[in-house]
Amino acid sequence: MESSLAMNTLLFLGVAIIMVPLARKFGLSSVIGYILGGIIIGPYVLRLTGNNVNDIMHASEFGVIMLLFLVGLELEPRKFWDMRKKIMGLGLTQMVLTISLLFVIFISVGWRVDKAVAVAMCFALSSTAIVLQTLQEKNSFKTTAGEASFSTLLFQDISVIPILAILPIIANYKAKHHDNEIQILIQKLPEWLQAGTVIIGVALLILLGRYVFVPFLRYVSKSGMTELLTASSLFLVIGVSELMIVIGLSPALGAFLAGVMLANSEFRHELEAQINPFKGLLLAVFFVSVGSTINFNIIQQDPLFIFSTVFAVVTVKFIVLYAIGKFFRIDTPQSLFYAFALSQVGEFAFVLINYASDLYLLSPELNAQLMAVTAITMCITPILLIVNDKFITPKFIKEIPEEKHDFNILDSDVSQKKIIIVGFGHFGSTVGRLLKANKMSATVLDRDSDRVKLLRSYGFKVYYGDATRIPILRAAGIEDAEILILCLDDPDDNKFIAELVREHYPGVKIFVRAKNRIDAYNYLNNGINHIYRETLGTAVDMAVDVLHEAGMRKYAARRLGQRFMAIDKASIRKLARAKDDDDIALFTTKEILQREEELLAYDNLNFDNKNWEGSSSADEEDEEESQD
Image 1 (tube, one colour):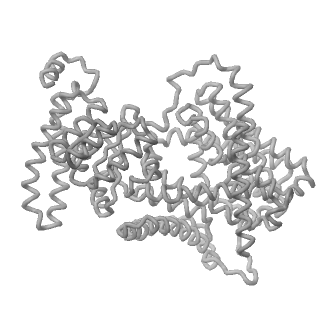
Image 2 (cartoon, rainbow, N blue to C red; image 1 turned 180 degrees about the vertical axis):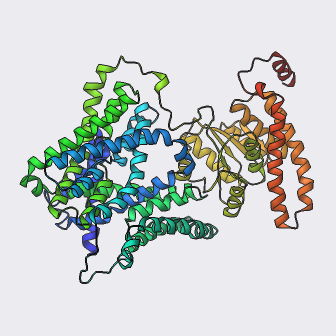
Image 3 (tube, rainbow, N blue to C red; image 1 turned 180 degrees about the horizontal axis):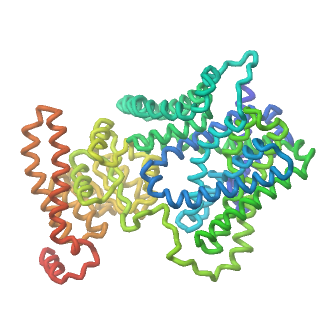
């Protein structure tokens, strides 16, 4: 009923507002506040949410679906390939050892093989939401344990796909015909095709992503209305999830695959910014529902089974994770944090356990017990981390980690500064082309979907997005950026973004395009010193200064700038003759971009060892001083 839905929404939001600040005050994770709040208002304590808790859980699982979609968006195939050794080393080892040990334990207590395998796979996963939030709260992403946790969680998120595919196989699942139920499409296929539904689903999503999703988003983006892009983002996630249900696969799997299909598209950051607020809100509701659905009657009926299972799972996962950390030569305090942080059962277990129950692998009673076990492990993890921080880690505080064993998973190239370019028109593209010709990468944001499509065909890393919005900048990586280059045609937007970034991210160095002298006065009065008025020369000057800021010597950067201007002036004549024929102009532009890179690369060969900071060449330093 509508009143019941409104009342439950009010209760969930109200308890979150009250309990989360209270939990944070005591040094606990906000997730614990959500879960404890759910327990309080749940049907087994205050009974404010009613008895039909399954509907609450089912509705809130959409937050997990959105989380998987965002995980897919972050998983660029190239990034995954670069991290493959560390992900496989840490993640695969953890999954194999944990599943094996838990399987042995479950078999030893008399479980069937199929049930033991299913539960072991579900319990091998850790909570992405709890761990990532803990790392953020402790500012531990760049630590050895933080990087190890990130790569392990990434492998676990990927493992959800094969687990979803394996569960129906080990269940030897055959559709049961019930009255008043709509049969899903998979039930109508021959049995020899049912095993390949994952392949069918992946193939279908690849086709949809390439020929439907991206063109659809380009069409919507031309309207210029942000609310339509928000609606489109939700439409895609919900639509893909429902499509997977029709096919017979998990909606979470569909959302993840849809995210992967769009990870390389120009709308990646826009989708992330649009979905993230809904994901955060729905995950909050999800964790409150976790607390409200803990069946205390089940716990009272067999507390020995519940808590012995909790102890066994947390202990096995802790031992496995600590052993992996020591095997990969992570120092003892970092290994302890890594083991405690990932020792719980993850939120995806709620989805997988319900899925296993639908396949008749688990009884309803065991389902409720395993749900309680999962929720309890999630509740005690922050407590274990507090114990580790206050009582265990201080004993090893004098240990010095060996630098040669330090993982650097998140920043594969520490010498490359994070650069963001906003606006890639005539001015911004000049800067971007010179950076690209010198093998310096930058993330580019632009609001012209046609231009984004064209530039991506040239190999530029360009994304569609409105940089006047903090979520878009955050999705593009402004929190880690060192240089922000503002090249939009609209001077008001450049001013707005500059003020926004200076307020929220004062450590970012801003390079800005100015329309005229008045704009320059405005920027100078607001503390922005890197100002470039609109000519080819100042655009090149901006790029030269960025090259120098990134580590290149001034003389080398200037020489490359002069070379670039000469090439650019020659290319203008060639392009002018082809401007009436779009196809010829497109080909010629791409040809010139390639030629610029070749000529500049050839030019670099003559002084390659002297062009970066740290060179000891006296001749170059003398020449540089004469230029100054």
